[in-house]
Length: 278
Length: 288
Image 1 (cartoon, chains in turn cyan, blue):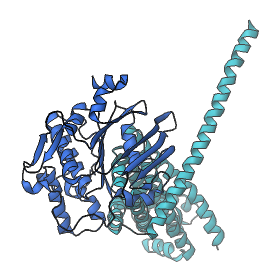
Image 2 (tube, rainbow over the protein chains, first blue to last red):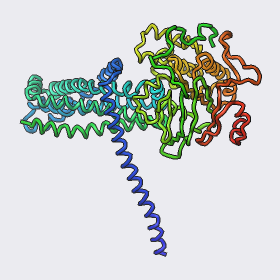
Image 3 (cartoon, rainbow over the protein chains, first blue to last red):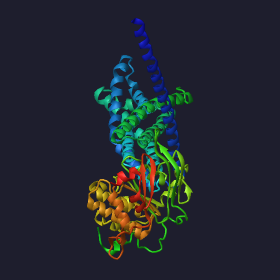
Image 4 (tube, rainbow over the protein chains, first blue to last red):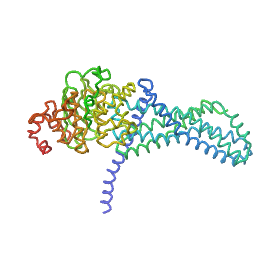
Protein backbone atom coordinates (compact mmCIF):
# COMPACT_ATOMS: atom_id res chain seq x y z
CA UNK A 1 0.00 0.00 0.00
CA UNK A 2 2.75 2.40 1.06
CA UNK A 3 4.74 1.44 -2.07
CA UNK A 4 1.89 2.26 -4.40
CA UNK A 5 1.26 5.61 -2.68
CA UNK A 6 4.96 6.52 -3.05
CA UNK A 7 4.88 5.53 -6.72
CA UNK A 8 1.77 7.58 -7.27
CA UNK A 9 3.36 10.57 -5.53
CA UNK A 10 6.49 10.18 -7.71
CA UNK A 11 4.41 9.97 -10.87
CA UNK A 12 2.64 13.21 -9.88
CA UNK A 13 5.93 14.88 -8.91
CA UNK A 14 7.64 14.27 -12.24
CA UNK A 15 5.15 16.18 -14.44
CA UNK A 16 4.83 18.88 -11.77
CA UNK A 17 8.62 19.36 -11.86
CA UNK A 18 8.55 19.52 -15.66
CA UNK A 19 5.73 22.01 -15.53
CA UNK A 20 7.63 24.19 -13.06
CA UNK A 21 10.77 24.09 -15.23
CA UNK A 22 8.74 24.84 -18.36
CA UNK A 23 7.09 27.76 -16.62
CA UNK A 24 10.46 29.07 -15.43
CA UNK A 25 11.91 28.69 -18.94
CA UNK A 26 8.91 30.50 -20.42
CA UNK A 27 9.19 33.35 -17.90
CA UNK A 28 12.93 33.72 -18.57
CA UNK A 29 12.33 33.83 -22.32
CA UNK A 30 9.58 36.40 -21.91
CA UNK A 31 11.85 38.56 -19.75
CA UNK A 32 14.67 38.44 -22.32
CA UNK A 33 12.18 39.23 -25.10
CA UNK A 34 10.75 42.16 -23.14
CA UNK A 35 14.23 43.60 -22.51
CA UNK A 36 15.10 43.17 -26.18
CA UNK A 37 11.86 44.81 -27.33
CA UNK A 38 12.29 47.65 -24.83
CA UNK A 39 15.87 48.30 -25.99
CA UNK A 40 14.82 48.48 -29.65
CA UNK A 41 11.82 50.64 -28.77
CA UNK A 42 13.88 53.06 -26.67
CA UNK A 43 16.58 53.25 -29.37
CA UNK A 44 14.00 54.02 -32.06
CA UNK A 45 12.35 56.67 -29.91
CA UNK A 46 15.68 58.45 -29.39
CA UNK A 47 16.95 58.26 -32.97
CA UNK A 48 13.63 59.67 -34.24
CA UNK A 49 14.72 63.03 -32.85
CA UNK A 50 17.50 63.25 -35.41
CA UNK A 51 15.46 62.40 -38.51
CA UNK A 52 12.53 64.35 -39.95
CA UNK A 53 9.65 64.72 -39.43
CA UNK A 54 9.96 65.92 -35.84
CA UNK A 55 6.67 66.99 -34.27
CA UNK A 56 7.84 70.02 -32.25
CA UNK A 57 4.34 71.24 -31.23
CA UNK A 58 3.79 67.86 -29.55
CA UNK A 59 7.00 68.37 -27.55
CA UNK A 60 5.64 71.65 -26.16
CA UNK A 61 2.24 70.13 -25.43
CA UNK A 62 3.80 67.22 -23.55
CA UNK A 63 6.20 69.52 -21.68
CA UNK A 64 3.15 71.43 -20.46
CA UNK A 65 1.22 68.29 -19.49
CA UNK A 66 4.16 66.60 -17.78
CA UNK A 67 6.05 69.59 -16.39
CA UNK A 68 3.43 72.17 -15.45
CA UNK A 69 0.88 69.47 -14.63
CA UNK A 70 3.21 67.79 -12.13
CA UNK A 71 4.34 71.03 -10.47
CA UNK A 72 1.83 71.00 -7.61
CA UNK A 73 2.59 67.46 -6.45
CA UNK A 74 6.33 68.06 -6.71
CA UNK A 75 6.10 71.28 -4.67
CA UNK A 76 4.00 69.60 -1.97
CA UNK A 77 6.21 66.51 -1.84
CA UNK A 78 9.35 68.67 -1.72
CA UNK A 79 8.12 70.88 1.15
CA UNK A 80 6.91 67.90 3.16
CA UNK A 81 10.10 65.89 2.67
CA UNK A 82 12.36 68.81 3.61
CA UNK A 83 10.22 69.47 6.69
CA UNK A 84 10.28 65.83 7.75
CA UNK A 85 14.06 65.69 7.30
CA UNK A 86 14.49 68.73 9.56
CA UNK A 87 12.12 67.29 12.16
CA UNK A 88 13.69 63.82 12.20
CA UNK A 89 17.27 65.08 12.22
CA UNK A 90 16.66 67.60 15.00
CA UNK A 91 16.35 64.98 17.74
CA UNK A 92 19.51 63.10 16.71
CA UNK A 93 21.59 66.20 16.06
CA UNK A 94 20.57 67.75 19.38
CA UNK A 95 21.98 64.69 21.18
CA UNK A 96 25.38 65.44 19.61
CA UNK A 97 25.02 69.20 20.01
CA UNK A 98 25.14 69.56 16.24
CA UNK A 99 21.82 71.28 15.47
CA UNK A 100 23.78 73.84 13.48
CA UNK A 101 24.31 71.33 10.65
CA UNK A 102 20.57 70.81 10.01
CA UNK A 103 20.74 73.06 6.96
CA UNK A 104 23.72 71.17 5.53
CA UNK A 105 22.01 67.83 6.20
CA UNK A 106 18.72 68.84 4.58
CA UNK A 107 20.23 70.52 1.53
CA UNK A 108 22.71 67.75 0.77
CA UNK A 109 20.11 65.01 1.25
CA UNK A 110 17.55 66.83 -0.90
CA UNK A 111 19.92 67.82 -3.71
CA UNK A 112 21.92 64.61 -3.94
CA UNK A 113 19.30 62.01 -3.23
CA UNK A 114 15.74 62.71 -2.18
CA UNK A 115 14.98 65.50 -4.65
CA UNK A 116 15.73 63.47 -7.79
CA UNK A 117 14.42 60.12 -6.51
CA UNK A 118 11.26 61.50 -4.95
CA UNK A 119 10.46 63.63 -8.00
CA UNK A 120 11.17 60.67 -10.26
CA UNK A 121 8.85 58.38 -8.31
CA UNK A 122 6.12 61.02 -7.97
CA UNK A 123 6.22 61.94 -11.66
CA UNK A 124 6.35 58.25 -12.51
CA UNK A 125 3.15 57.68 -10.54
CA UNK A 126 1.44 60.51 -12.35
CA UNK A 127 2.89 60.38 -15.86
CA UNK A 128 4.14 56.84 -16.52
CA UNK A 129 0.64 55.68 -15.60
CA UNK A 130 -0.98 58.32 -17.78
CA UNK A 131 1.29 57.48 -20.73
CA UNK A 132 0.66 53.74 -20.41
CA UNK A 133 -3.11 54.11 -20.07
CA UNK A 134 -3.45 56.73 -22.81
CA UNK A 135 -1.35 54.84 -25.34
CA UNK A 136 -2.83 51.51 -24.21
CA UNK A 137 -6.36 52.80 -24.82
CA UNK A 138 -5.28 54.00 -28.25
CA UNK A 139 -3.88 50.53 -29.02
CA UNK A 140 -7.01 48.61 -27.96
CA UNK A 141 -9.34 50.99 -29.84
CA UNK A 142 -7.19 50.63 -32.99
CA UNK A 143 -6.26 54.33 -32.96
CA UNK A 144 -2.58 53.41 -33.21
CA UNK A 145 -3.32 51.18 -36.22
CA UNK A 146 -5.38 54.01 -37.71
CA UNK A 147 -2.40 56.34 -37.29
CA UNK A 148 -0.12 53.82 -39.01
CA UNK A 149 -2.69 53.36 -41.77
CA UNK A 150 -2.69 57.14 -42.30
CA UNK A 151 1.07 56.99 -42.86
CA UNK A 152 2.09 58.50 -39.50
CA UNK A 153 4.66 56.76 -37.31
CA UNK A 154 3.09 56.48 -33.83
CA UNK A 155 6.48 56.16 -32.15
CA UNK A 156 7.65 59.37 -33.78
CA UNK A 157 4.37 61.19 -33.14
CA UNK A 158 3.46 59.96 -29.65
CA UNK A 159 6.49 58.41 -27.98
CA UNK A 160 9.46 60.60 -28.91
CA UNK A 161 7.83 63.87 -27.75
CA UNK A 162 6.78 62.28 -24.45
CA UNK A 163 10.25 60.88 -23.73
CA UNK A 164 12.18 64.05 -24.48
CA UNK A 165 9.68 66.40 -22.83
CA UNK A 166 9.62 64.24 -19.71
CA UNK A 167 13.42 64.02 -19.52
CA UNK A 168 13.76 67.78 -19.97
CA UNK A 169 10.97 68.75 -17.57
CA UNK A 170 12.03 66.32 -14.84
CA UNK A 171 15.30 68.23 -14.56
CA UNK A 172 13.42 71.44 -13.73
CA UNK A 173 10.90 69.69 -11.51
CA UNK A 174 13.82 68.26 -9.50
CA UNK A 175 15.31 71.74 -9.07
CA UNK A 176 11.89 72.94 -7.85
CA UNK A 177 11.62 69.96 -5.47
CA UNK A 178 15.13 70.65 -4.11
CA UNK A 179 14.34 74.32 -3.51
CA UNK A 180 10.99 73.50 -1.89
CA UNK A 181 12.60 70.82 0.28
CA UNK A 182 15.27 73.22 1.56
CA UNK A 183 12.61 75.89 2.15
CA UNK A 184 10.35 73.39 3.96
CA UNK A 185 13.28 72.26 6.11
CA UNK A 186 14.04 75.92 6.86
CA UNK A 187 10.44 76.59 7.91
CA UNK A 188 10.44 73.63 10.29
CA UNK A 189 13.86 74.61 11.67
CA UNK A 190 12.76 78.19 12.37
CA UNK A 191 9.11 77.80 13.40
CA UNK A 192 9.03 74.37 15.02
CA UNK A 193 12.59 73.64 16.17
CA UNK A 194 13.12 77.35 17.06
CA UNK A 195 16.62 77.47 15.59
CA UNK A 196 18.34 80.26 13.75
CA UNK A 197 17.16 80.60 10.15
CA UNK A 198 20.27 82.45 8.93
CA UNK A 199 22.46 79.70 10.31
CA UNK A 200 20.29 77.05 8.58
CA UNK A 201 20.47 78.69 5.15
CA UNK A 202 24.15 79.63 5.38
CA UNK A 203 25.05 76.04 6.33
CA UNK A 204 22.84 74.74 3.54
CA UNK A 205 24.64 76.96 1.02
CA UNK A 206 28.24 76.87 2.23
CA UNK A 207 28.61 73.10 2.31
CA UNK A 208 27.26 72.52 -1.16
CA UNK A 209 29.91 71.52 -3.70
CA UNK A 210 29.60 71.46 -7.49
CA UNK A 211 29.78 67.62 -7.58
CA UNK A 212 26.72 67.53 -5.27
CA UNK A 213 24.75 69.74 -7.64
CA UNK A 214 26.02 67.77 -10.65
CA UNK A 215 24.88 64.51 -9.04
CA UNK A 216 21.47 66.03 -8.36
CA UNK A 217 21.11 67.21 -11.95
CA UNK A 218 22.41 64.09 -13.70
CA UNK A 219 19.97 61.77 -11.96
CA UNK A 220 16.71 63.32 -13.22
CA UNK A 221 17.94 63.03 -16.82
CA UNK A 222 18.17 59.26 -16.37
CA UNK A 223 14.98 59.01 -14.33
CA UNK A 224 12.95 61.08 -16.79
CA UNK A 225 14.08 58.91 -19.67
CA UNK A 226 13.39 55.70 -17.74
CA UNK A 227 9.90 56.60 -16.53
CA UNK A 228 8.69 57.98 -19.86
CA UNK A 229 10.17 55.23 -22.05
CA UNK A 230 8.78 52.52 -19.76
CA UNK A 231 5.36 54.20 -19.61
CA UNK A 232 5.22 54.47 -23.40
CA UNK A 233 6.63 50.95 -23.90
CA UNK A 234 4.00 49.25 -21.76
CA UNK A 235 1.29 51.42 -23.31
CA UNK A 236 2.28 50.53 -26.86
CA UNK A 237 2.40 46.78 -26.18
CA UNK A 238 -1.02 46.67 -24.51
CA UNK A 239 -3.28 43.80 -25.47
CA UNK A 240 -6.48 42.34 -24.10
CA UNK A 241 -8.92 45.24 -24.07
CA UNK A 242 -9.63 47.48 -21.09
CA UNK A 243 -8.29 44.87 -18.66
CA UNK A 244 -5.03 44.98 -20.60
CA UNK A 245 -4.89 48.77 -20.23
CA UNK A 246 -5.13 48.38 -16.44
CA UNK A 247 -2.38 45.77 -16.44
CA UNK A 248 -0.10 47.92 -18.60
CA UNK A 249 -0.61 50.89 -16.29
CA UNK A 250 0.30 48.89 -13.20
CA UNK A 251 3.33 47.32 -14.91
CA UNK A 252 4.51 50.74 -16.11
CA UNK A 253 4.34 52.40 -12.69
CA UNK A 254 5.83 49.47 -10.79
CA UNK A 255 8.65 48.88 -13.28
CA UNK A 256 9.49 52.58 -13.62
CA UNK A 257 9.56 53.16 -9.84
CA UNK A 258 11.65 50.06 -9.11
CA UNK A 259 14.10 50.75 -11.93
CA UNK A 260 14.48 54.39 -10.85
CA UNK A 261 15.47 53.31 -7.33
CA UNK A 262 17.75 50.59 -8.72
CA UNK A 263 19.47 52.92 -11.21
CA UNK A 264 19.84 55.58 -8.49
CA UNK A 265 22.15 53.22 -6.62
CA UNK A 266 24.44 52.81 -9.65
CA UNK A 267 24.51 56.51 -10.53
CA UNK A 268 25.34 57.37 -6.92
CA UNK A 269 28.13 54.79 -6.94
CA UNK A 270 29.57 56.15 -10.20
CA UNK A 271 29.30 59.78 -9.10
CA UNK A 272 30.93 59.08 -5.74
CA UNK A 273 33.80 57.28 -7.41
CA UNK A 274 34.24 60.17 -9.88
CA UNK A 275 33.90 62.89 -7.22
CA UNK A 276 34.89 61.40 -3.85
CA UNK A 277 33.76 63.20 -0.68
CA UNK A 278 36.46 65.57 0.64
CA UNK B 1 -27.48 62.30 -46.71
CA UNK B 2 -26.87 65.70 -48.14
CA UNK B 3 -28.24 65.79 -51.64
CA UNK B 4 -26.41 68.88 -52.70
CA UNK B 5 -24.66 68.50 -56.03
CA UNK B 6 -21.57 70.16 -54.62
CA UNK B 7 -21.15 67.22 -52.25
CA UNK B 8 -20.99 64.60 -54.98
CA UNK B 9 -17.36 65.53 -55.69
CA UNK B 10 -15.03 64.81 -52.81
CA UNK B 11 -12.47 67.33 -53.93
CA UNK B 12 -13.42 69.49 -56.88
CA UNK B 13 -10.18 71.46 -56.76
CA UNK B 14 -8.48 71.16 -60.09
CA UNK B 15 -4.91 70.10 -60.65
CA UNK B 16 -4.88 67.53 -57.87
CA UNK B 17 -4.79 64.38 -59.89
CA UNK B 18 -2.68 62.60 -57.31
CA UNK B 19 -2.23 63.48 -53.67
CA UNK B 20 1.08 63.75 -51.78
CA UNK B 21 3.11 63.81 -54.95
CA UNK B 22 3.16 60.06 -55.41
CA UNK B 23 2.82 58.39 -58.74
CA UNK B 24 -0.33 56.60 -59.83
CA UNK B 25 -0.68 52.89 -59.13
CA UNK B 26 1.56 50.69 -61.24
CA UNK B 27 -0.15 48.62 -63.94
CA UNK B 28 -1.05 45.14 -62.72
CA UNK B 29 -2.75 44.19 -59.48
CA UNK B 30 -3.08 46.89 -56.84
CA UNK B 31 -2.63 44.29 -54.14
CA UNK B 32 -1.58 40.68 -54.50
CA UNK B 33 -1.49 37.92 -51.85
CA UNK B 34 0.71 34.90 -52.60
CA UNK B 35 0.36 31.87 -50.33
CA UNK B 36 0.00 34.03 -47.24
CA UNK B 37 -0.12 32.33 -43.84
CA UNK B 38 -0.34 34.08 -40.50
CA UNK B 39 -0.82 32.96 -36.89
CA UNK B 40 -0.38 34.65 -33.55
CA UNK B 41 1.82 32.26 -31.56
CA UNK B 42 -0.71 29.52 -32.20
CA UNK B 43 -2.52 27.75 -35.02
CA UNK B 44 -2.65 29.75 -38.27
CA UNK B 45 -5.47 32.28 -38.54
CA UNK B 46 -5.08 32.48 -42.32
CA UNK B 47 -3.67 29.60 -44.35
CA UNK B 48 -2.19 29.76 -47.82
CA UNK B 49 -4.24 32.73 -49.05
CA UNK B 50 -3.73 33.81 -52.66
CA UNK B 51 -5.74 36.41 -54.55
CA UNK B 52 -5.32 39.82 -56.14
CA UNK B 53 -7.23 43.07 -56.60
CA UNK B 54 -7.09 44.62 -60.07
CA UNK B 55 -7.29 48.40 -60.68
CA UNK B 56 -10.91 49.54 -60.40
CA UNK B 57 -11.98 46.26 -58.84
CA UNK B 58 -14.02 45.95 -55.62
CA UNK B 59 -13.54 42.69 -53.71
CA UNK B 60 -16.15 41.80 -51.13
CA UNK B 61 -14.70 39.55 -48.47
CA UNK B 62 -17.35 37.37 -46.87
CA UNK B 63 -17.12 34.99 -43.97
CA UNK B 64 -18.42 34.35 -40.47
CA UNK B 65 -17.15 36.34 -37.49
CA UNK B 66 -13.65 35.42 -36.25
CA UNK B 67 -12.53 33.79 -39.49
CA UNK B 68 -9.68 36.25 -40.11
CA UNK B 69 -11.27 38.87 -42.37
CA UNK B 70 -9.88 41.86 -40.44
CA UNK B 71 -6.48 40.17 -40.24
CA UNK B 72 -6.45 39.78 -44.01
CA UNK B 73 -7.30 43.47 -44.41
CA UNK B 74 -4.47 44.50 -42.09
CA UNK B 75 -2.07 42.33 -44.09
CA UNK B 76 -3.06 44.19 -47.25
CA UNK B 77 -1.52 47.49 -46.09
CA UNK B 78 1.24 46.04 -43.94
CA UNK B 79 -0.29 46.65 -40.50
CA UNK B 80 0.42 42.96 -39.95
CA UNK B 81 3.22 40.88 -41.43
CA UNK B 82 2.64 37.36 -42.75
CA UNK B 83 4.52 34.39 -41.34
CA UNK B 84 4.83 32.83 -44.78
CA UNK B 85 4.07 33.99 -48.31
CA UNK B 86 4.18 37.51 -49.69
CA UNK B 87 1.95 40.55 -50.08
CA UNK B 88 2.51 43.05 -52.87
CA UNK B 89 0.99 46.52 -52.68
CA UNK B 90 1.21 48.88 -55.68
CA UNK B 91 3.75 46.50 -57.17
CA UNK B 92 6.06 46.54 -54.13
CA UNK B 93 6.56 43.58 -51.82
CA UNK B 94 5.56 44.81 -48.36
CA UNK B 95 5.99 41.54 -46.50
CA UNK B 96 9.33 41.90 -44.73
CA UNK B 97 9.51 45.63 -45.51
CA UNK B 98 10.59 47.88 -42.61
CA UNK B 99 7.81 49.83 -40.91
CA UNK B 100 9.45 53.19 -41.75
CA UNK B 101 9.48 52.33 -45.46
CA UNK B 102 5.79 51.45 -45.43
CA UNK B 103 4.46 54.82 -44.26
CA UNK B 104 4.83 56.40 -47.70
CA UNK B 105 2.97 53.49 -49.32
CA UNK B 106 0.21 53.64 -46.73
CA UNK B 107 -0.50 57.30 -47.48
CA UNK B 108 -1.73 56.04 -50.87
CA UNK B 109 -4.29 53.78 -49.21
CA UNK B 110 -7.35 54.54 -47.11
CA UNK B 111 -8.71 52.32 -44.37
CA UNK B 112 -12.03 52.35 -42.52
CA UNK B 113 -11.76 50.43 -39.26
CA UNK B 114 -14.44 48.22 -37.77
CA UNK B 115 -14.97 50.49 -34.75
CA UNK B 116 -14.10 53.68 -36.68
CA UNK B 117 -10.85 54.23 -34.68
CA UNK B 118 -11.34 57.99 -34.55
CA UNK B 119 -8.90 59.93 -32.35
CA UNK B 120 -10.88 60.71 -29.18
CA UNK B 121 -8.90 63.80 -28.27
CA UNK B 122 -9.33 65.49 -31.65
CA UNK B 123 -12.36 67.19 -33.20
CA UNK B 124 -14.04 65.76 -36.27
CA UNK B 125 -12.23 68.41 -38.32
CA UNK B 126 -8.83 67.34 -36.98
CA UNK B 127 -9.67 63.66 -37.37
CA UNK B 128 -10.67 64.01 -40.99
CA UNK B 129 -7.75 66.33 -41.73
CA UNK B 130 -5.20 64.23 -39.83
CA UNK B 131 -3.10 63.32 -42.85
CA UNK B 132 -3.27 66.82 -44.32
CA UNK B 133 -2.23 68.42 -41.00
CA UNK B 134 0.77 66.08 -40.73
CA UNK B 135 1.80 67.13 -44.22
CA UNK B 136 1.64 70.81 -43.27
CA UNK B 137 -1.18 71.78 -45.63
CA UNK B 138 -2.35 75.39 -45.08
CA UNK B 139 -5.16 75.78 -42.51
CA UNK B 140 -7.60 77.45 -44.92
CA UNK B 141 -7.13 74.67 -47.45
CA UNK B 142 -7.47 72.02 -44.77
CA UNK B 143 -10.80 73.53 -43.67
CA UNK B 144 -12.05 73.63 -47.24
CA UNK B 145 -11.06 70.02 -47.90
CA UNK B 146 -12.55 68.80 -44.61
CA UNK B 147 -15.87 70.57 -45.30
CA UNK B 148 -15.98 68.92 -48.73
CA UNK B 149 -15.20 65.50 -47.28
CA UNK B 150 -17.81 65.90 -44.56
CA UNK B 151 -20.29 67.12 -47.16
CA UNK B 152 -19.55 63.94 -49.14
CA UNK B 153 -20.63 61.81 -46.17
CA UNK B 154 -23.45 64.17 -45.20
CA UNK B 155 -21.99 65.37 -41.91
CA UNK B 156 -21.02 69.03 -42.46
CA UNK B 157 -22.66 69.98 -39.15
CA UNK B 158 -20.21 67.86 -37.14
CA UNK B 159 -17.14 69.91 -38.14
CA UNK B 160 -16.30 71.14 -34.61
CA UNK B 161 -17.67 68.24 -32.59
CA UNK B 162 -15.69 65.57 -30.78
CA UNK B 163 -16.15 61.87 -31.72
CA UNK B 164 -17.65 61.12 -28.30
CA UNK B 165 -20.71 63.20 -29.17
CA UNK B 166 -21.42 61.30 -32.40
CA UNK B 167 -23.57 58.21 -32.91
CA UNK B 168 -22.03 54.95 -34.15
CA UNK B 169 -23.21 55.56 -37.71
CA UNK B 170 -21.91 59.11 -37.72
CA UNK B 171 -18.54 57.96 -36.43
CA UNK B 172 -18.37 55.39 -39.23
CA UNK B 173 -19.15 58.09 -41.79
CA UNK B 174 -16.49 60.40 -40.33
CA UNK B 175 -14.04 57.47 -40.59
CA UNK B 176 -15.00 57.12 -44.27
CA UNK B 177 -14.42 60.86 -44.79
CA UNK B 178 -11.00 60.51 -43.11
CA UNK B 179 -10.10 57.60 -45.37
CA UNK B 180 -11.25 59.39 -48.52
CA UNK B 181 -9.94 62.93 -48.00
CA UNK B 182 -6.52 62.04 -49.36
CA UNK B 183 -8.03 60.53 -52.52
CA UNK B 184 -6.54 57.07 -51.87
CA UNK B 185 -5.62 54.76 -54.71
CA UNK B 186 -6.80 51.72 -52.77
CA UNK B 187 -9.44 51.42 -50.06
CA UNK B 188 -9.93 48.93 -47.25
CA UNK B 189 -13.29 48.81 -45.48
CA UNK B 190 -13.47 46.68 -42.33
CA UNK B 191 -17.13 45.85 -41.64
CA UNK B 192 -18.27 49.42 -42.33
CA UNK B 193 -21.90 48.57 -41.58
CA UNK B 194 -21.37 46.22 -38.63
CA UNK B 195 -23.74 46.87 -35.73
CA UNK B 196 -25.61 49.71 -37.43
CA UNK B 197 -29.30 50.18 -38.13
CA UNK B 198 -30.58 49.40 -41.68
CA UNK B 199 -31.02 53.07 -42.67
CA UNK B 200 -27.46 53.98 -41.65
CA UNK B 201 -26.17 50.79 -43.32
CA UNK B 202 -27.84 51.86 -46.55
CA UNK B 203 -26.30 55.35 -46.28
CA UNK B 204 -22.83 53.88 -45.81
CA UNK B 205 -23.23 51.38 -48.66
CA UNK B 206 -24.35 54.25 -50.86
CA UNK B 207 -21.15 56.13 -49.96
CA UNK B 208 -19.07 53.08 -50.86
CA UNK B 209 -20.89 52.66 -54.19
CA UNK B 210 -20.35 56.38 -54.83
CA UNK B 211 -16.63 56.07 -54.14
CA UNK B 212 -16.45 52.98 -56.37
CA UNK B 213 -18.36 54.46 -59.31
CA UNK B 214 -17.29 58.11 -59.15
CA UNK B 215 -13.59 57.71 -58.30
CA UNK B 216 -13.08 54.11 -59.52
CA UNK B 217 -10.87 53.39 -56.50
CA UNK B 218 -10.16 49.67 -56.07
CA UNK B 219 -11.10 48.28 -52.68
CA UNK B 220 -11.54 45.31 -50.38
CA UNK B 221 -14.69 45.39 -48.31
CA UNK B 222 -15.08 43.06 -45.37
CA UNK B 223 -18.60 42.19 -44.32
CA UNK B 224 -20.70 39.35 -43.04
CA UNK B 225 -23.92 41.06 -44.13
CA UNK B 226 -25.02 39.48 -47.40
CA UNK B 227 -27.61 42.17 -48.12
CA UNK B 228 -24.85 44.83 -48.17
CA UNK B 229 -22.73 42.72 -50.48
CA UNK B 230 -25.64 42.14 -52.88
CA UNK B 231 -26.59 45.83 -52.83
CA UNK B 232 -23.04 46.74 -53.83
CA UNK B 233 -23.20 44.27 -56.71
CA UNK B 234 -26.62 45.19 -58.01
CA UNK B 235 -26.51 48.99 -57.74
CA UNK B 236 -24.61 51.85 -59.28
CA UNK B 237 -24.20 55.49 -58.36
CA UNK B 238 -26.12 57.95 -60.51
CA UNK B 239 -24.26 61.26 -60.47
CA UNK B 240 -27.18 63.11 -62.05
CA UNK B 241 -29.58 61.99 -59.33
CA UNK B 242 -26.77 62.06 -56.73
CA UNK B 243 -27.97 58.74 -55.39
CA UNK B 244 -27.67 54.97 -55.69
CA UNK B 245 -29.91 53.34 -58.30
CA UNK B 246 -30.44 49.63 -59.04
CA UNK B 247 -28.88 48.13 -62.16
CA UNK B 248 -31.26 46.63 -64.74
CA UNK B 249 -32.68 43.28 -63.61
CA UNK B 250 -30.22 40.42 -63.93
CA UNK B 251 -27.26 42.77 -64.34
CA UNK B 252 -24.46 43.09 -61.80
CA UNK B 253 -21.43 45.34 -61.51
CA UNK B 254 -18.68 43.46 -63.41
CA UNK B 255 -15.92 44.95 -61.25
CA UNK B 256 -17.42 43.81 -57.97
CA UNK B 257 -16.45 40.26 -57.08
CA UNK B 258 -16.47 38.02 -54.02
CA UNK B 259 -14.01 36.23 -51.79
CA UNK B 260 -15.08 33.92 -49.00
CA UNK B 261 -13.10 32.68 -46.02
CA UNK B 262 -13.77 29.63 -43.91
CA UNK B 263 -11.52 28.37 -41.13
CA UNK B 264 -8.67 30.54 -42.37
CA UNK B 265 -8.82 29.29 -45.95
CA UNK B 266 -10.02 31.08 -49.06
CA UNK B 267 -12.83 28.83 -50.25
CA UNK B 268 -14.34 31.05 -52.93
CA UNK B 269 -13.09 33.65 -55.42
CA UNK B 270 -15.48 34.76 -58.14
CA UNK B 271 -18.45 36.80 -59.33
CA UNK B 272 -21.92 37.04 -57.79
CA UNK B 273 -23.30 34.55 -60.34
CA UNK B 274 -20.55 32.06 -59.51
CA UNK B 275 -21.19 32.59 -55.81
CA UNK B 276 -24.89 31.90 -56.19
CA UNK B 277 -24.19 28.76 -58.23
CA UNK B 278 -21.40 27.48 -55.97
CA UNK B 279 -21.71 23.86 -54.85
CA UNK B 280 -19.43 24.37 -51.85
CA UNK B 281 -21.45 23.27 -48.79
CA UNK B 282 -20.14 26.13 -46.63
CA UNK B 283 -20.96 28.73 -49.30
CA UNK B 284 -24.44 27.25 -49.67
CA UNK B 285 -24.95 27.28 -45.90
CA UNK B 286 -23.68 30.87 -45.66
CA UNK B 287 -25.99 32.03 -48.43
CA UNK B 288 -29.01 30.24 -47.07
